[in-house]
Image (cartoon, rainbow, N blue to C red; front, side, top):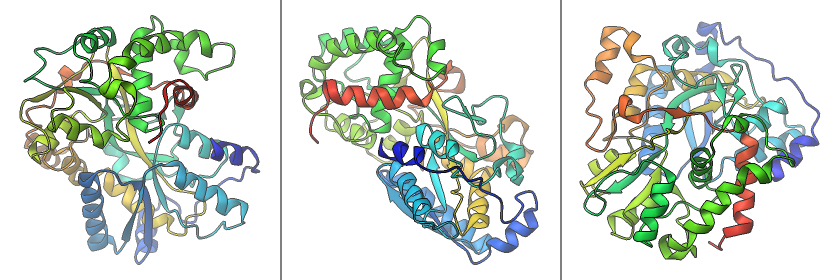
Length: 398
């Protein structure tokens, strides 16, 4: 990717705190009146509404103005920070906070383009489930306090029970089902995040030993390790929606295809998304979700603060609020968003725990026990190479 090449040309510079994140009173005082430009994916109405609600809360309580800069590709925000660095704009950049993870975080961290560490000094960090959830590593890369979590995600497959009798337990079963039901399944076109996740999900399911994926992909091991993935896709592609000659551009484009009875099966990275869509009359009530027998990929969504933000304190206010029980329970509500929480709900004070206990997760949402094994994300280098290789082998013009 272009931003990786730019990063390689930069001289690393450590980002130092202007206000000590551990001095919360000083952070709150400095944040009052600041405007935070949060560069975040803007492809979901529910997510956009949630971010707008967050803005209302931090404005009322802390005097922080939150502006949502809607992205289609997180790399655009990374490139903006890199361009400012090259131009010597080190004090008041255009990007104050980024919804980020994976390769984008790894690249910015390696180039010392991040403010912090700050995350583990935020007051609400004490409520986070550090032991039970992947909140201190991001695609195997240690976060080291340079990003804070705000949502949990896990791959699920959405299926219409009016057309599919039972869940499928493996990618091989899904392949066999598509052969018997051509045209009724698809996935977003990589390098879309969910499309690339589908490639990784196939890979972790068809490999006997996935431990190699925790290490960077190399020229020496890449072809051998990914061979089973490409063999699988060679069989799958002719049986996809529109015979693999077109793909949905994003994950949000999948549900309308089910609603219009063009698809019976799709993939999602939010266990509660289908219930939320049913509640919003965007999916038929017959849709349910399943995971695979070996487990499915899961990770946390994070926010991070660029080194040259002029509103670091305001960004910390927003990051801390995102980890609050109020925000986390609202995000988990399937009628609103349906994201998984990063908090250790069982150990919350009774009043905060009640916010989660009152939630009806929805008819299509699997319980934590039913979600089964969470498979760790591969090292980010695999995602980059897989998406590029897929484009060469199967890519179509959008």
